[in-house]
Image (cartoon, rainbow, N blue to C red; front, side, top):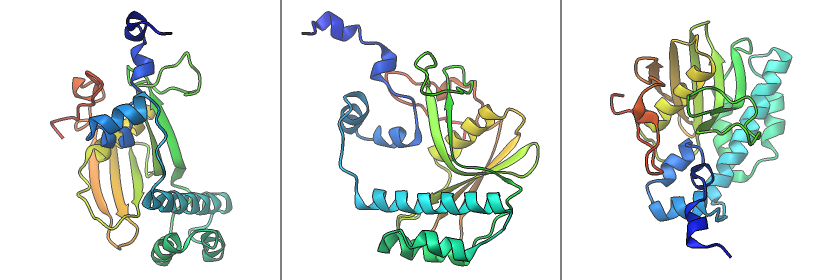
Length: 228
């Protein structure tokens, strides 16, 4: 049986998980955040979330295939991958199919997971308990245009179109710039795959300085860079 003293002795790293895009969103409801991310409550998956997972899996598999084969498109493979998805996911993927091609030479990775420690240094093995992650995120698609310029594409499948200049549009470039300090400019593209025109936000080191105290967490909450 735990005494009050032992409860207070629980370390902060156990009580507060790494800051991520999804956890930042959950902070809008304190009860949800505590139950889900501190106490580990398992919540049922919503239909939109399940649809989004299907779409991301198909797109990642497709783009990885393009990289392996050195092709800009391969609609036959895309159609085959799409057949395994549900009706709603296929409806969204049909629109993506018609207007996307890629340069396989510029693609760095799909579903790129990046974890940083408290000093904003990359963690090579996030599962190693000796390395404590303070920040983490999974980037849908990363493309390297030059030694100093990169692009992050993030896919959204829901109906509502939101402004691309969000916490995520700063946080993901921060993760990538910390992973690759030679980058000077990262364009964050928020693409609503139901529609045609993506929304883009360019970021530079000046807008998302990793050393800023605004990125550090206090009292279990994230503070967004107020200068962005």
